[in-house]
Each structure stands twice: as structure tokens, then as C-alpha cells.
Length: 251
Ligand SMILES: NC(=O)c1ccc[n+]([C@@H]2O[C@H](COP(=O)([O-])OP(=O)(O)OC[C@H]3O[C@@H](n4cnc5c(N)ncnc54)[C@H](OP(=O)(O)O)[C@@H]3O)[C@@H](O)[C@H]2O)c1
Image 1: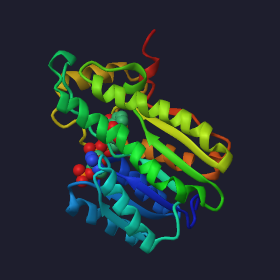
Image 2: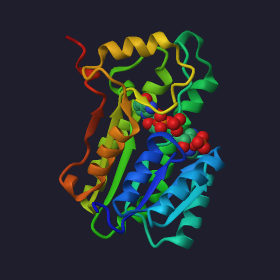
Image 3: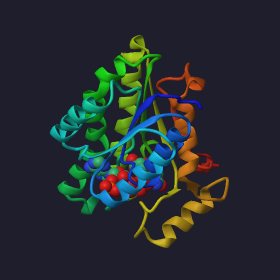
């Protein structure tokens, strides 16, 4: 049990990578608070799965892009838990468009959810993390698009690059309070987030993946578990690519 009795807050865990992280953490002894935005039915299904593992669980409907919504969640959480040890800023979305067609709304939505949402949650829960017995931990979900850039994703790539800069700067600021801050940069992970993406884009990506398969949410959750655990106790300010080696495809 790598996270026995730790309290973890995971944003965007009704489905996909966030859900897998929530289940993995719960299997390893953590109590789970998680945020979702729209899918109450899915969120309650996830909560039931966590409950079956014998851990406490608190799903809350929150829009991470709205500071007031995250603040209200903090008040709810304080009624149920003494503190938080682990924050995973995972909630995210994309709204792709070639830059010449990109609307201000597409730009703002993606930046507000992915980047500003990460700021809101970290800013509002940093005091809880400061009080964590044994040291707090923040894990931010970046993307390889934030490292290499991706056509049609200037907004998404900018939001994820921003998360990487945020991770490194915050790691320096809070290290003296025994908080570690790291990021994960997934490649192509099968979750449903790419529903609607043309097949030829996925086929092109697959050719570049050294391991010749797309990733699973479990591939990412395993790395999140490691980063949240004492095994990563001397790691901070780092970005770990979970991309099957797509980043090696330059040569
Ligand atoms: N899948 C990939 O290939 C991939 C690659 C690189 C990086 N990532 C990153 O990994 C993270 C998770 O991706 P995923 O594929 O698991 O996505 P997903 O399956 O689409 O799930 C997204 C989750 O975020 C929640 N969410 C969306 N907007 C929100 C908001 N404003 N406030 C609160 N929650 C919100 C959703 O809640 P509802 O269910 O209620 O809508 C859902 O739980 C994202 O940050 C994504 O950018 C994914």
C-alpha cells in the first residue's frame, strides 16, 4: 500500500486518466476526493468503484476554470476531511483548430480550463498541502503537445507548455515546505478524449510511436502512483513523458 491513509484530490476523475488514477490511488490505500464537471452519472459510478475498495470517497461537481466553484469545493471538503496530501491537476480538454481559424472562444476555453484551472486548484489547496504530514505532492497533467507543439493545437499546446513552466517554478517555491511538484506528459492515450479525431491523424501518430501501440490510462496512472509515493521522495520539478517513445521520432 504505497499511499496508505493519504488523502488525494484528483480533478477530472469521472472518466479517463483521472478515473484510473483515482482507482490506482485507492487500491494503494488513499482516500479520494475528485472533481467532475458534467457527467454526474459517470462520477457516481466511479465513486461506487472506489467505495468498493474500502476507501472514503467524495465526488464534487466543480468547474475548475471558475475560481468561486473551486473555493466552494474547499468548504465542502473541509467538512469531510482534515487535510489533503496529494493534488492531481488532471482536468483538461481540447478544442482544435488551425491557428488561422481559431476563435477567441476556443483559445480562452482551453487556456481557462487547462492552465488557469491548474492555477485555481493549486492556489486554493496549497495551504492544505503545506499542512500535510510527511510532505505534500502536486502532479500536473501536461502533454507531449506542450513540449513539441502540435498542428491544430496552438491553444492546447500553449496551455500544456504553461503547465510545465508552472510546475518548475512552483517546485522551486514550495520545496522548503516539503512539497514536491511534478508533471506527466502523456502521448496518445486511449480514453475517448480523441473521439471525433480523424483516423489518419491517429494512424500517422502510431507510425511515430517507438513501442508501436497507443497508451492506456493505466500507463499514466502507474507513473502518477510512483510520483505520489515516497519512492519519488527526491524528485521535484520534473516532467515525465509517458508516450511510448514518440518523442524519440526525430531521427
Ligand atoms: N488522452 C490523451 O491522449 C491525453 C494526452 C495528453 C494529455 N492528456 C491530458 O490528460 C488529462 C485527462 O485526459 P483524458 O483523456 O482522461 O480526458 P477525458 O477522458 O476527456 O476526461 C476529462 C475529465 O476532465 C473533466 N473536466 C473537463 N473539464 C472540466 C472542468 N472545467 N472542470 C472540472 N472537470 C472538468 C471531465 O469531467 P466530465 O466527465 O464531468 O465532463 C472528465 O472527468 C487532460 O488534462 C488531458 O489534456 C490526455
